[in-house]
Image (cartoon, rainbow, N blue to C red; front, side, top):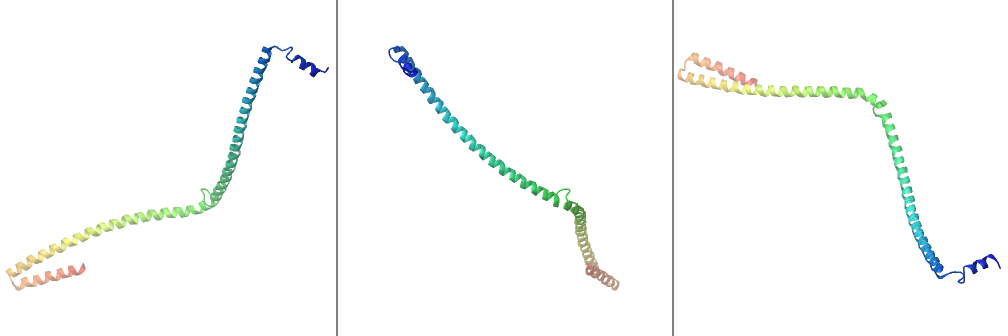
Amino acid sequence: MGFSTWGRKICSNRFASPITGSVMANALSASQAAGETAAQRLAEATTRLAAAATEKEDSIWRIGELNTKIDKLNEELLTARRTGGPGGPLATELTPVREAAEKLAAQLASANRTVAELNARNNSLQQDLEVAKQSVAAALAAQAAAAKAAPGDAMRLEMATLQNQVRALEAQT
C-alpha cells in the first residue's frame, strides 16, 4: 500500500469526526471566498494598471508634442535674434533709423506747435483788422456827416483824401 492510499484512509470517515469535517468544509468555503475576493481585487488592480499605462502613454505622447513645439519656438527665437531681435545684426542696423525717426518725430511735434501758434496769431490779426475796418468806417461816417454840415472846398478835399486812404487800406486786405 502506497502513501497516497494510506493518506486516504486517514482522511476517511472512520478516523475523522463530524466536527472536523464541518470545520474543514468551513475552512474550504472561507478559502474559496478569500480566493474569489483576491481574484476580484487582482482583476480591479489589472484594470487600474492598464488605465494608468494608457494614461502614461498619452502623457508621453503629449510631452513629445510639447517638446516639438518648444524646439520649433526656440528655432524661431534664434532666427529672430539673428535677424532682428535685440542685439542681432538687424537691430544694430536699425538703431540709426530709430534715432532718425525719433529726431523727425521731435521736429514734427515742434512744427505742429509752431503751426498752432501761427494760426492763433493769424486769428488775432484778423480780429484786429476787423476792428480797424469798423473804426475807419465809423470815422468816415463822422467825416461825411461833418462835410454835409459844412460843405466847404477844404472839407471836400479832406474827405477825398480820407476816402482814398480807406480804399488803399481795403485794397491791402
